[in-house]
Image 1 (cartoon, rainbow, N blue to C red):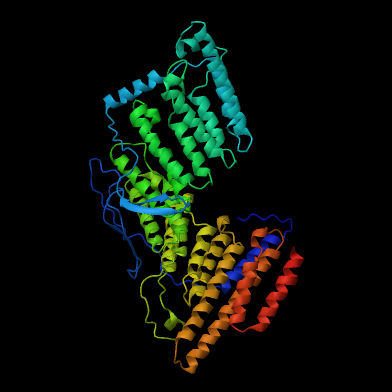
Image 2: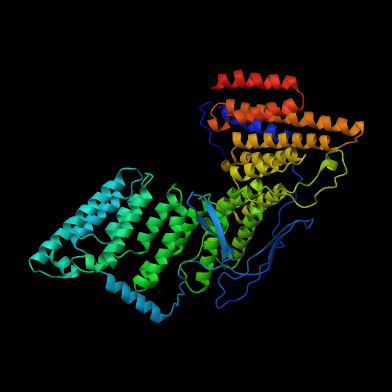
Length: 595
């Protein structure tokens, strides 16, 4: 079950025994299992009604304390805030809009429409000579490299061939020879005639290039294609249909902007999607090969979601709604997948906005709804679940449920609402249950799932944060002992558990400061809780150090400076000065010997 790198025969038994001891010391979690038995999804029709669903998905536990997430009536565009960049380079907001600036297109999938688009596509095809085929194959092979030197070479080869071709056409014109490109191609097998594939290979090379200005070069090549195709007066041989950009050309440039770290790259990708629709509607003759598809939208959504710009999550959600609207109008190519939803959910998690976790949960529930309606690509994956868990862990709107009374004092009269950490734990329960029922590895909880929920408890501000974190840690270690290598413990998860116990100490001290009158018994009990939490921090650190020092374990188990500082701070708050000395000695001597 385990992958051990040590040659020592004692390495595996030692780790198994030690992890079993760790589990025995952890406090079991008391959280109820997350159930989906109360889920209700009702479908209605809307001229085909593809994405349409309404109602509420309610996920309940035995105590009927669940998450109510209202679904959108459809994936229609909500009111959004248009954001622009002012002269100082800062974002500024204008009035809300409800119209997507790209030209909308209603696809009518009739036999007449299909025949027309097929005929248009065939008319645009030209026979390619053997020299051009060899040239394109060479560019294609070069474009597969991920480095900073191949793309300039590919572009140089393309532009050199283009110059030679234009020079040859000019010479023939001077000689009085006038032949269309198709006829010229048939008679000149040794002349390279750059075409759409040639340019697209060069654009793809720039999309995979690691240089900072890669996206600009890719955009310049697309602009040159558009110039050659749409400006016949500048071309010796008239309008060049053989360099007409297609969806692959556009998608490669969008991908280049999506991978770029340059400021404003996400907006460039959005603008290019709008231009792509304009080209399809106005210049391409409704060529189906030029119509934006799911890859076009997915690349733009990913670029916007990862941009960290203001309102980037809402902008990405707006694009997702546009996909839904166009799909409902008949465009079968615009079906979002789990990665699209996951990118937006992750954007909400990283936005650090109040209530962002509710928006993330709504998207997750929408995915569940679509999957239940037969959309297999919308099935949530581990990545999507982890992104939603991260949104719960980072949401600043954490409604802390006061559990002081359960901990041994106080009247417990504070917010009764379910806090974000509890919701995250319920979602983890749902993941475990679903994986156990379906045995689908795509939704299998991993180390990120468990460490994120532990971190959510650490951020909750509850006096029981440490106890709850221990319960999650126990469950994760149990899965690892049962053979799940994706739950292999590391320093991150132990540090998160230590942080949760440190949070418990801060919450207890905060209660002491706010309470004016308290009996001696309650005060003594709280002091004992402080010492117990601080001691648990020290125990977790020592267990981590022992795991790190076992033969054959990698450096992912090495405690960081943050780990040591958290434990030292907890012991200091508990006034355990002997413990502080032990941790200082362990940090200065014990870990140095292991290194």
